Image (cartoon, rainbow, N blue to C red):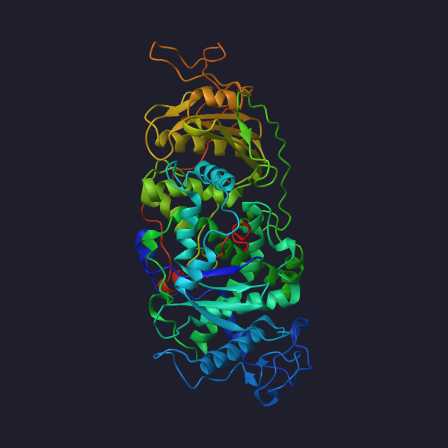
Length: 584
């Protein structure tokens, strides 16, 4: 069963991500409030501009009204005010009243009615964690396979457990979820404390309840088969919820009376310092780019465009990042040529493979600056400036904190398949992977290869020699790496030792590392030291022969930070668990 969860990350995230804080800037969401609110048509049967149902007036809002009425739920009108606050917590009747008012307001913003009630319940953090961690994907084979996926992304080190890192993010920070299978919202509250909730979290989850009533979120189309597929689908599912949540918050700031959010997010979540920010920023992508994606859909085709996209969700994070519903991908052909005792995991992923996608690849490069201080995306800039490549605000939407996932190092993604391998057992057990990536152009592939080489050499001690296996002994990602570009394809091979790389991909035209006896890097004997894949790569230190110059080194330390603290918390309070990893 899929759960749509939300996370609550504390203020420490701001310091950990080295973000600047400025004043609130009016943006499209805030500016739309006046034009979107005050004037309503004469009655619920009337149709507002653009064919959307008009919201009911307060006089037309009565208990027992049918579900065709917009802006009114169980006799509560969207413009009503609550007679209580949550300074001493919410009792059962107050939570129900808040839910009815929030449903009416979500209806008004979304311009369509709920079809039935959405029950809201609460659980303690301990109850949630006991029920949620582990899941059905706790087999040793899956854990070993998944470890290699996140190690390949340079987010979870060799000696760490990826599933434990994921559980640490979600188990300690989830503030609530909507369960499509049970048609209910569950809010996580602190043990032994009064019930306090964030009204924005409730609005966000009610959007999921409405989506479920119209589209049935239990359908297979809403659970991607791969990591990239999961994040892509959430680009519209979570993007719509965040977009409406933003409009809700802007209305609260303008002309609605709303409850204040509880301090520290409520629910007793863990410290942001405990989270793996590589995982966190990967799963945040649908909420940042997805909200902009949905906003663009609404601007171009109204809510009907969102409905149509819900029926045919995005297929890749690249589509959401670049807000291009027509984004073209291609199938990745892969032939297992491994020798020795190396084997894939045919029962994991899609026939043994994971597709990571553009968003995860961007985070891979960005995370090296945050966690290790290596400036990878822009090598000539500082690590801090590299962090802000991701954390700078989008100039088109300054009403909340949002993240950037676009960079020429990963632009042009066309597809990828990552195959974890295992060999041996007991003390001889070895892990490795072959990662085949496809790019729109040879220049895109060269940019990615250059940045990847920059990353592995940052973790090693030696210079990279084109055409040879690269080896590093220390750090979180030790072992041997082969990197080969052939036109628009870049293939990455990893094993504990160079011999394993050559066994995993014996046809990759890779030579062992140079020896201390002076064995040079001139693999093909022409004196150039160029890669032997297609003869075009000139290495990571210069321009590629096809005219690509790799990532720009530009930003500098003056790159701006986020616009608002509240906006950051609003975004970080809306995070989806990778659906494929959270089935009950």
